[in-house]
Image: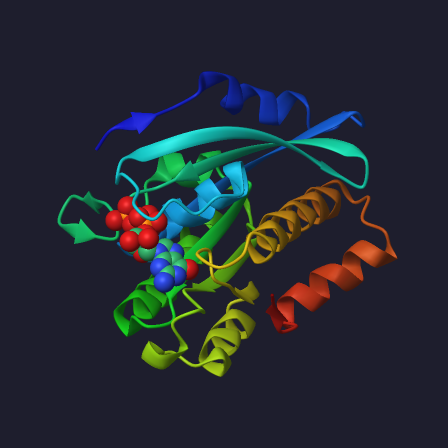
Length: 220
Ligand SMILES: Nc1nc2c(ncn2[C@@H]2O[C@H](COP(=O)(O)OP(=O)(O)OP(=O)(O)O)[C@@H](O)[C@H]2O)c(=O)[nH]1
């Protein structure tokens, strides 16, 4: 497995957390093969859908503005790897690095939905031991392929609800907007998780966290 790690990203997310001018967020993308993790990442970075992508682990840095504030997104597009004899292994290093996790499945691939179900459980268990709860958003991708759908929106939403995750159904192939919403919501959840940790979450933050937990339906 090749991992392109930008060293700057690791330290900067810690040092700039409290800075009002610029905030950073480390976001880990997980999910089975072929579900569109790279497509989502590249859409967010370039606004484009290019069709075919490599399958190496990569970490990308990207700047964006939310409500006039500069945000540095560090995105780890993780290939579906094998650790020891376990397929779908999630490395401790990945979890320690991540401020938030986006778990992707394809709405026309039930096996990929089952992978998300298993990985969400593993993250909840592992991350609690490492450093407390981490915000997770579950994304059902390839919404443009309705005729091949094998996982209903309800199932996706119910899984998210039961595991305290946000939920979106999108098509990375069709639109940029849905992908943008996912990353912006992820940043908001990370910000609120940090505020809750520091005990500075306002009423709005608490309400938003509860909404994420109780799973509003989020679609494009
Ligand atoms: N129809 C459709 N195809 C998509 C969509 N997103 C990705 N794809 C296609 O699905 C295939 C896999 O996309 P990738 O982004 O490489 O998937 P991945 O999850 O990164 O795959 P791995 O690198 O193997 O882990 C490619 O052929 C993409 O063009 C989508 O929203 N709709």
